[in-house]
Image (cartoon, rainbow, N blue to C red; front, side):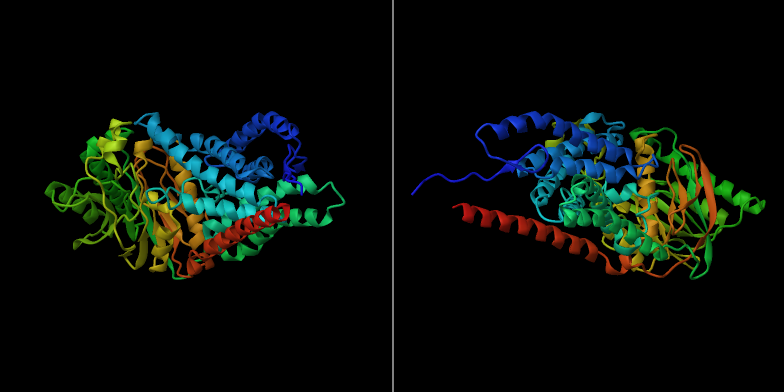
Amino acid sequence: MSSSVTAEPGPGVDGEAEPAGPAASPRRWAAAWPVRAALAVGSGVLLYLSFPPRPLWWLAPFALALLGACLRGRRARAGFGLGFLHGLGFLLPLLIWTSEGVGPVPWLALATVEALLIGLTGLGIALVSRLPAWPLWGAAVWIAGEALRARAPFGGFPWGKLAFGQADGVFLPLAALGGTPLLSFAVALCGFGLYETLRVGIDTRRATAALLAATAVAAPLAGALAARPLVSDAAEEGTAMAAVVQGNVPRAGFDFNAQRRAVLDNHANRTLQLAADVKAGRVPKPDFVVWPENSSDIDPYTQPDAYEVIDNAVKAIGVPVAIGSVLAPETGPLRNTMILWDPVKGPVDTYDKRKIQPFGERIPMRSFVRLFSSDVDRVQRDFGPGKEPGVFAMAGSAVGMVTCFEAAFDDAVRSTVQDGAQVIAVPSNNATFGRSQMTYQQLAMDRVRAVEHSRTVLVPVTSGVSAVIRPDGEIVRQTKMFTADALVAEIPLRSTQTPATRYGPLPEYLLLLVAAGGLGWTLARRVRSRRTAA
């Protein structure tokens, strides 16, 4: 009996299996690798260009199509490497704002870690890319990768989800149907389908494959069209006059923290000016006001002068005001807290931020990280997370608090709406990141959340861009950066829950099952192939 075994065909340059000759495959692979590597990086850069502040959302499917061309038919190791290069091309420019004031080390470390997770995603896509209807399995694996990045390491960093680049896109209504996982899935499916359509569409002998590829492109577009009735900005429980205050900061960067009293005074003075404008009839009187995160980094519970400044401003406007503060208990961690301040009763309710930013508000592995950057000592005392969603009763309106970084997390926003919020407020502090693109990236997240949960989203920011976003995702008022301002707008109060709100993480779980099914099918095929060869 012969001891020789026929080698399994390897992936060729065009993504199809090629003969496993002793020298042909390595030579062709070596020649193709630099091209594929460049295309993988280019697909990441193209995906970055689809994100705000550029209104080029339509580039995202083409970026995924290019990535699909790189990954289809590749072995697992190559899939990981190409996925990692795609991640670097995407995340290095997208996250460069994290280097503001602290140098390149945190930026490079964060982008590299996140790119490694995208590398794992590329590995998974490569594995399922030989299956029939592979764009379906590949898009589901992409969602599995986004789910992983949203949870690990250190609680996750969901920044850069495909969904967050689609605030102006045709796929946006899908957010109301299945949240950001379904929206991201639609973009990935359309992108992989585009590549597959080009690959097999000209081969009349593969009619079934061509039909499946065309369906992968058409289905997300049809789904988005069918979901449009879920997008509405109609007032269901009347309207409210809301105001957001942007007090501005003395200067950008981390040094703004040294000017805590000036920041507090800026927001108090801008509220006093708003009260004067109301009294003079220049603007309508708001029913409630929201200040940004960190608008009072001085604890008003322990500092009487801060209490007096806030109380005077709230009494002047004469309506409830949500104040962003930092509370410093005698023991335990700090708390990033929103305080509901009544003009008569003073502080009556609080909400503690639940998603605490690692390496920003808390420092994991402090002694180890200090070896690479002494900037970790800027955070001398870690913040601790809250446990419950916060919905403030503000003059008859239920206003849900989602503080800054929390807007990137599906569960943080959803739980607030499920707890009864008729309006979502996202008080934020972007002063640390100067005039970078970060504020526009976050504003796009807020627009997606508005459609996802069919709620007005109020975005008060210390230094810009503050905004009022309608439930259909439209920005109706916004400020300029580093300008003291106040926005007053009539907003609809809504209580209807979208399918995305009602079903919560179910769409994501279903897509994870699809990804697991594709990977399981791939494993079964490999086991069967090896048994047959043996």
